[in-house]
Image 1 (tube, protein in one colour):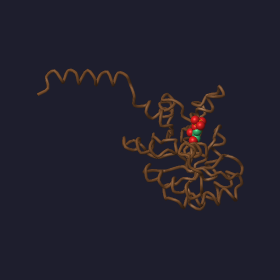
Image 2 (spheres, protein in one colour):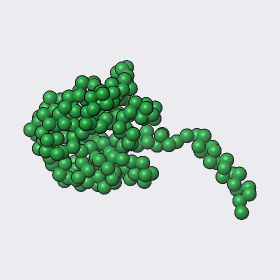
Image 3 (cartoon, helix red, strand yellow):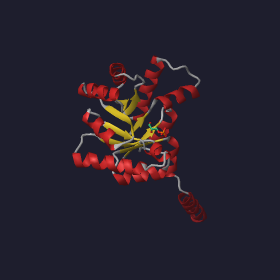
Image 4 (cartoon, helix red, strand yellow):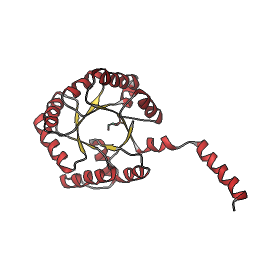
Length: 223
Ligand code: G3P
């Protein structure tokens, strides 16, 4: 399973890419808005384009950039503009009627599409039939409503395998390290997670304690 960062923050991307474990990045309008607000920068077409290109360079892999249009025609136009920014851009579309129409058109043109906001296996099936390269079920938001995000992912992974669908499954809306383990065990192709969860994947008190002891013992006898 590949590991992606779910962020629009360049420092976070550079840090995790530096570990040598980052395969890609996903963004969404909330994350982009948060990033520009934190920098006190007004969002412009040019500013967004430059920022997405910088994310691509830092990520070194696919970068999902989401359209904000809600109608197919406008989604296609926005998707084309996003895809033209950098060869690593994957156009992210919401799983709606208009999103499906836009997915079919963009994928037929050779643009890679990530269908997002997926909350059922049937939505994932429709996205795959519309030519999506990726589907993004939202584990955390399903758990939030006392349902089972893991069960949703299990069904989608199984359906993709049984039906031999040419689509990669991104476990999204990851909230904690256990989600990552679960997604890997269930056979997700990719898990996309916030920077804080990436850090939690690595951190273990026994690793810190063990290293401290090794260093103390070494200090006593080192040449
Ligand atoms: O980027 C889509 C998804 O990962 C969002 O996660 O935590 O806002 O539900 P969250």
